View 1 (cartoon, rainbow over the protein chains, first blue to last red):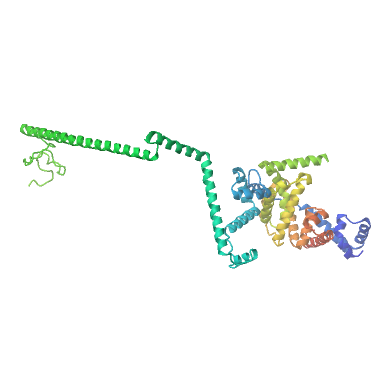
View 2: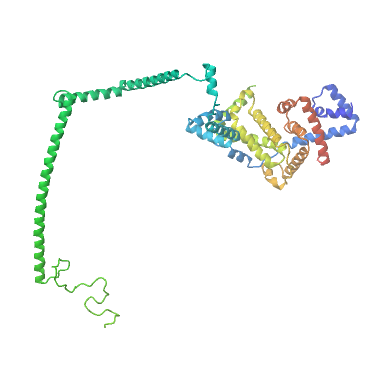
Length: 306
Length: 193
């Protein structure tokens, strides 16, 4: 065995995975070759050093850091997240699932990318407008189906009439359906009962014109009553006005008499009504703007008596 | 066989509790596997900061895919480490297989020491050896580096590496062989061995 051959399988020799025959040849070569013996020793020492240094001590806070980074509460896998995406967009996701869904979304870059892409795709679909058809498409379709470019005019009218009849028939069916519904039937019965009542109780000849006639007569009566009531009210109001004006004249006379009497006796009459043209008396009370000290006619303090 | 079934039932129960929102059960899983996953992440990315971020990311992914664990298909440990290895290798490939140089000082990682029950001297030696091995691994080409980490640090079998990396067994053996020789030479130059 040469040195090159030995060095090609030195790893397997150390691992002990060679066949016994090859292993024997290697052992023989190692015994005879100092360089390969040296290399073998180095490789074995290297492997021992690797085994010794295999475990690297992590920092003390690594565990707490990992625990902090993983959200608390029940976990949601990406597979479950994928299943809930449809419900999320449709708004059917339950409140409890929604929170776990949100937590997973915050923590998982893959699902963040996925959800963002789906959201974007949905938005683009919504924004997409209908593609305008080529101008001659209609003509080409007509030619391909009925073999002509334009439909004759009578066929057009026939189509319009058919369409109108279809629409009218649908409207009639809808109205009949409404009438036959429980609400519609109730309304019809109530209306018929009301008309019957009016014919029997109000009309004098069991016709609708009789109802109208009787209604007019009653309305005229009501109007006449209201008119007479109004005239009576006006008469009462004018009588009341006369009484109040007489009463106020009496009161005014009484007040004048009182003032006159008090003036003759000599009582101060501040605030009492004053006869027109009567001489103004000196006020006993001081005016609000006068300085202190002038209350009793004396000179004001600090004021020039002149 | 009985012990295996009991273990599988325990795993299934733990996962069920996690899925129901039991935080204690999830904490148990994080405590049990964070060291192994962090070590693996560190070997690939080369710095403690990046390894921390990657470990956190791996646990987040595990958290979200925990319902996919099938107790009939194997133990939780195997499933979890398989998921973690795939994620870490994927992440490393996405990063362009450019590990950051382990330029961290010993002081920067002094907090690592307090969680071990060994003597301070022994811890410092282990720490130094770990950093030297990491520096040597960083010098390997991406292909050799992946195989060496999976074989000599993670101690996966050849077949497991074949399944994980989706490459032929002969290629795996060749890369492991070349990687070991390269690593031995680098460590000798660094006077580690």
